[in-house]
Image 1: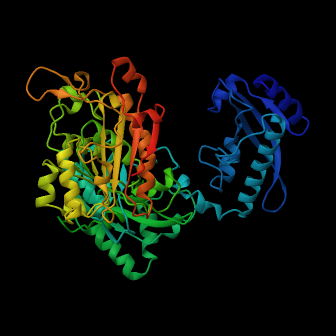
Image 2: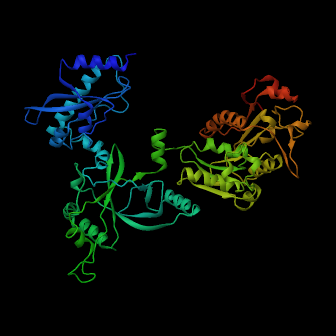
Image 3: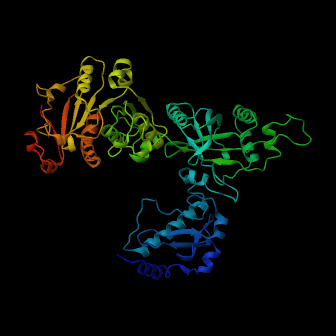
Length: 580
């Protein structure tokens, strides 16, 4: 591979034959505001202006220590930027956008990479001067909107946007008493996503006030940068709208004296985005004017006409956007409403996998609290000691994603099925991770009786996680009992003889027996089993089936634990679909 110094020498030798090149001193770099610790060259060259006449310009080309693995950056000189600023692909920091972020340089030809960079920069500037790439403003609109065009020009990014449908003319605005991270305001219109967020605020005891904002048509003054507009420039543009739109804007701004949020929509790359602004609060108490004789519009358009608007870029926070950014999909058609009965060591860790489904919703059922002895293999830790396990999981999930819907019942699943079966039947899948055979048998009967109508997964593990099992029951084909012998023993157990004290350890006190297995083995079991669970969830098959995970059989050998005849046919760390 070509090293940095060799690459720079090759570029210098090649480019100096084609362009006028000057290596900048540390003093000059500092003088023009460029980093002193990097190699920076000044390229003096020519382009054609709008009349096809030669125009002399200067670039500054910046090389980074990992060159030629990365592209150099090209910046237009300050003087030339002032002469042609605000053309497409030329940022306010003078950077010329010459390569897409997924491009990679040819590391074997660094001189050709730099030559191509200069060529592209020239073409961008020539097209911009001639107005031949004005359509590219649309693709880069957000970058221009977020740029600072003057010393006091700041774009407010503390607005969160929660919307599942296009915003209506009057939308809702939450003002938080204290910011969550950097977010102080939440734009919404009381859809499910916003109701989930409000529930999170209530659970976290976060206080807020609610007002409204106003959606305007896109103003013509926002077709090209710069966007650091004044109150007067906004009002002049508003007055050019249809009379009805103009009057509604003025009426809204005159309602109460607080600052008002205005948004407009813009389609960028087939996606509706929102941008906006707010005017500073109108000052209505002025000498020479009777009290209440001034309204907001008059005060802002006269006495405060030269004040700049405060631009806003709401940050979109929706499941659809997260899905597109992570999986590259527009819509998630998979079923994603899960009920978990039992959120102990197996159920809580299963949530980690189920929550990888974008837009997952959870309904959690459990009566127990998280005790100190649980946290060695529970998904949650010390912070949640003495919390109800359901409430703790809900808090954890909504801290991670406040728009996620999580409901809980601190009851046994038997009570829930008897008293509130819709809590289960409005979901897509039921997961039972209780590990109590009597309750599991009761649930199977409830499926037969039509009290539970949703596909159900039963998961449990054997001591030391020598075996882990999953029975999947589709209500249309309930063959649960075929997995067991007439004596009620599971046919595919890995442990062969349970009359061994080492299989159930005990601490002091009543009801203190526990089954030993490690957190690491839980992840091995669930990580492998989830591949089957995931495949079933997206399948349209009505087949019911079961799977067995064979753990580390050397543990049984070390502890003198007898294994079943069934297990002898399989290697450690095997996942088997059982034949009924």
